[in-house]
Image 1: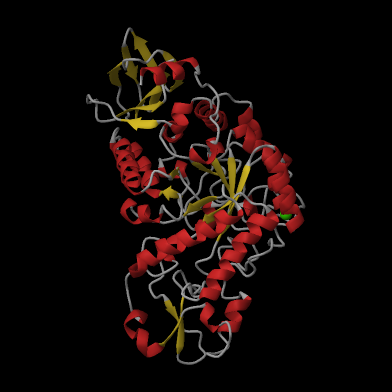
Image 2: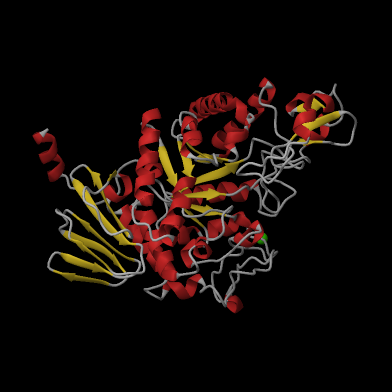
Length: 507
Ligand SMILES: [Ca+2]
């Protein structure tokens, strides 16, 4: 034991550890449609992502998650009509392959959204399936006779991630209804059919092997089978992972299981990374209720709960995403709370996700289109690539400072994000360390924890409140590495004003 410690001391790590991503790295989520338009049609495109890779590397992210890029009749593209090509609004497969090449040159990974729970009702499979009971594609979807599902047709309960009350839909062609969890335009695929499973595995192989993506974000992963068949869901994803590992042993799979940790955790053996929605909601609650320890305690609980199932997991923390109101709106549009929220995200365990536009403080509230507004690269007169497919309501030049201007302002959101990500990337204990809770108690609005990796320890204190808090310098805190807001230090006494934060390391 003594030997191990002294060896570690001699090799003090100050750089990013090997295999850093995806375990502790930062992923940047892009809605291509609103990102950067290169051909002047008003719609962001794949070439626009390629053109702006330097933005992602400057920010310090290690990977990009692209929201759906496949052909689809909807602007959001979560209902696919062709699983093996690129939406023509976004460009071509060649454009996409070029993006992969350029991203990989910059050591950026590319993860794409894969939507397999359902297809579009305009997918050729469904068009065939609707034709009748004898059609070879009939069993690609879930059909039932009206009489056998009578009690479900009138059901009234909605779930967390669908406003849809009735999951059975009448195609208007006779007695049979089809199942579509989200709505009638998204019929659920029938995973009891081995042919469907093989089609899906084949789609995965195509993107991994022939195209060369680094992984998938699996949409609606909880709904492959209905809720009462949870075990079948878990087993399906294990099988999917096994099939994908055959092509790329380092494949990254991150799943969307929109639920509490008890429901989320059993998916880990199949989906080693899962979004931590508890983190998102608790982060907002902690800041708005000025409750210092609620997030630390919740996160500790989640990590312990996950660890009981497997040690092989990635906690994909999120501060917001394309389905949530913009984070700044959730925090009363208070820039100090917002900056602290990011300081918290970047100092807590996990592999954080940043939703595009967050780094410049974009705004947005439901409906969903308005939380997916065009990125502001430059002041509008000079912004060559600004998307115009939608009129922004919340993120305009009057409310959001475009990126180009923020770059020159040391106190901008962009430089705040950039500074924190850099700190995280250069401090291994912050990226991959354990989460240690304090033994003593502090004021209600004080968040205190430390992160340990090997012999490195990082001490973090945030005052989430609007009132001044005083704390004592933690033992072992030798070198200050970050400060946010107004802080006064007198000897070992630290005085933290509203939404201020301070971080030290032991060496
Ligand atoms: Ca375009």
